[in-house]
Structures are given as structure tokens and as C-alpha cells.
Length: 415
Image (cartoon, rainbow, N blue to C red; front, side, top):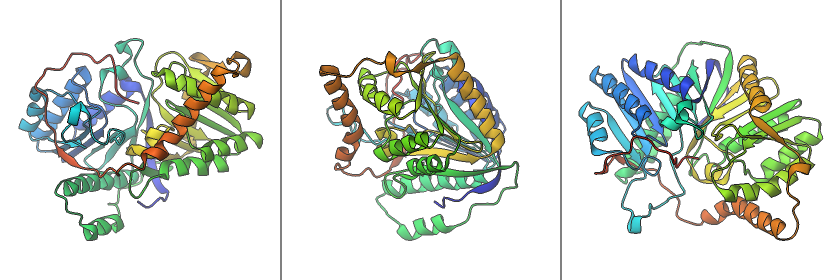
């Protein structure tokens, strides 16, 4: 994928399910030709049922509808739910399906974590929001704080082309036919042209296990090196590589205001233990840390200086940076940067606790050893795990479960 800035785009920041779902469902309701969706989680709750209704209506109007889910993130869709979609002509694809020996999923660590929607090749959505009720405030204290963007302009053609290629490649791998000549031709072909709709230049950046293994992290590091005034990163799981941390520390030393918005209540105690050593390390370098405590933080957004921003599905941890299939948009636009900045400033002021060294437990004795082991295991296990066989993306028709789904899903599998 050509990593070049594509000009002439318009981006709208969408916050949480309240901002995201109405826009996606409205666009699907107006679809004339095609709807493509990729999502890690699809639950059969009130959000999943709304999506089902919208997709069935689009398919019955004659639109081609494809939805790809990760079979670990969305394992329990009922036969009734899936057959209603299929009966209307919706094509449902499951990423990495197959037998589960002893109840375990092969290639458990490699997941299709992207969240993408493309409607009629004219409107796209990219972000971190899944199709589940826990992205809505009325879910309660466990409702997630998250972001996505609605996109219009030439970048949509790039995203559209990517989604078609992902579908085609996944189905070819299913048939065990690796048609390299066709793959190279697809990669070289230019995107369909779309008219300029705004002033934003942008890139669509993905991470996979073949050709783009570190593209998202590399774009972050490039932007950090270029930053001169400020860096604000809001990320649910923050355990990046050593080079990433080194660039943040260098930015702070040259006078950049570096701020991190991280989870105040992580869903795994191990994460909190590992973070203790990281916090000490970052604070001593002059980096400010804010813990979001209002509800679970699920966002994956960042901004640098006055123009650069990113929104997407990629956490800054080993799962996203080494294993998962991810997608982010990187935006160069002053107006969007200001919008995201105002949102994150509000979070820091109203819903975060600033972490200072005097508030951290002293690391010595067993707490130091425990934090050291947890941190370095978190950082290094992806390298060990890459010794395992590489995951080859496959898409197969979804196999429904025979059991009915519960009306709500209090325990999400999502990172």
C-alpha cells in the first residue's frame, strides 16, 4: 500500500456509540450499491440487532452487502441471527475459522481487529468502535469511551480498494491458491478517483502479518520525531516498543509537552502491575500521565502539534503492534486536530486523575521485582510468540452456534 498523503478529504470525529452508530446506520439506510463492514466484535444485543436490520434492508434493496467478523471476537451469533442475514443475501465472512481442539482456537493471538465501514465507495468509517451495546452510555459503568471518524473524499477510494482486496485474498487463501500475479496487479492499480470534499490530507495505514508489519508504529515514531510543541496520546493499552518510548523521552527532553491518557481501571490486574514500572520511567523523563477513571477507556487516538492526528483500531501494545490486523487513518488537518484536541483536553480536565511520582507506590523489594517481571514479559512475549507459525488470513462463511444469545454482554472480549 502506497504510504502517501492523499489530499482533499473531510473528516468528522465521532465519539462513542452515540455519535457512531446513528451515522453508520443512516449511511447503510441510504446505500444504493454496496456495503462493506469489517469488525472485531458483533454481539447479538440491541446494537447488533439494529445492524442486522439495516443490512437486511440494504440487501433487499439490491445492494451487495459483505460483513467480516473475527471468529474469536464474535463467537456466539445464533443460527437465527445469521440465517436472517443470509436469507436476505448478506454475505457473512468469518476470519480464521476452523476446528477448536480441546476447546481452544488455533492462532488465538492473531485476530482481525480492524473496524471499517465503506458504503457505496463514497463514505467510509474507521475507528475503534465495535457493534455492541457496551459502546453506549446506557450500558452503565462499563460503557466504553471510544472514537471513530466518518470520511469523505479521495481517501475513501483507497479504503474501498483495500477492503475488496482483503475479501479477495481471504477467499483465495481459503482455496489455497496463492495467485501472486493477480495480487501484484491489484496493488499497483490506482484507486478510483473521488472529488475533493475538504482540506485534509490523509493516509490509510494498516498492520498485517505479511507486508505491513510495523507501518502504524512507524508512522507514530515519524510524527513524534517531528513534534515541536505537543504530543497527546490516548490509548487503552500502552506498552509500545523501546524505540517508541525512546522517541517520546527525546521529545520531552527537547521541550515538547508530552501527555498520555491511559486506563485508570484496566481490566487485567497484570496490566496495572506492569504499568507501575513504565509510569516511573516515563514520569522521570518529564512525560505527563493522566488516568481516565470515568469508565473503561477503549480509544486509540493521538495528535501531534497543530495538524497531525490519528484515529483507528490499533492499541500501542504487543497485541496490536505484533499480532493483530489493524487499521488507522492519519490526518493532516488543523481543524480536525483542534476538534480532537478540545475533546482530549476535556477528558483530561473532567475525567482523569494526573499521575505524579509521589502518588505511585515505591518500587523496591518484591514490588520492584514483580513490576519488572510483568513489564518485561509484556514487552518481550510477542518476540517469543513470533516463533510460532505465521497466521495466513482466511475467510470462510460464518458457522452459527446452536444456542441463543443472551440479551446483553457484560464481559467484553475486546481490547
